[in-house]
Image (cartoon, rainbow, N blue to C red; front, side):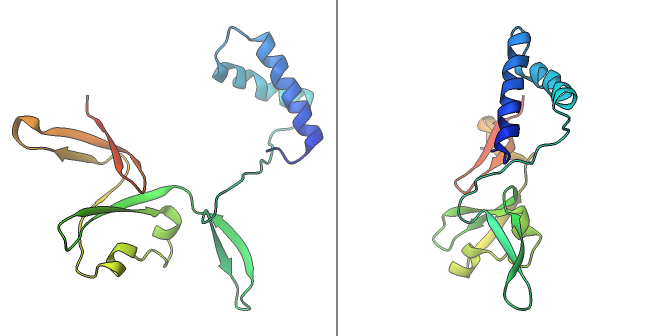
Amino acid sequence: RVRDLALKARLQSLWKQVQAENAESSESEQWQRFAPEARRQIGIRRVRLLTTMGEGSLAFVGDATGGFYKAYKTDGNAYMDIWLLPDGKTRGETVSRFDAHSQRGHSQIKAKHPAARKLMRLHIDDMVAMGEGENRQIRRVQQLSDHEARQRSRE
């Protein structure tokens, strides 16, 4: 993923050297030793990495002529809206940070089901009560995905 192949080879060689010299250390300690060594031996402070992204992971910004002049990564979720559909089922809709901060953030569920009602909006680290009576659990939202909101029980 490093663009410059010669630099990539030098970095890989240096990383193997640091790993060999610090075999008893954890990987995070090895990284802490690697950065100053890369700065000292190769003379770099930052490396630009190339990232392969899936379809739909870029949002293009166009100009008045219809051409694109920049693109943003759309990764990272801002929140999840939980909708009550007319048939009584619930459905979650994840909204990316880019869509949340642009005018594109219109709900596809609401467009498909105009009578749908928004029950709640979940953000990372929100606390949610689940169950009733003795079965009631307090959980924390850890991750938002298109399929579900994963939570972890409060300890």
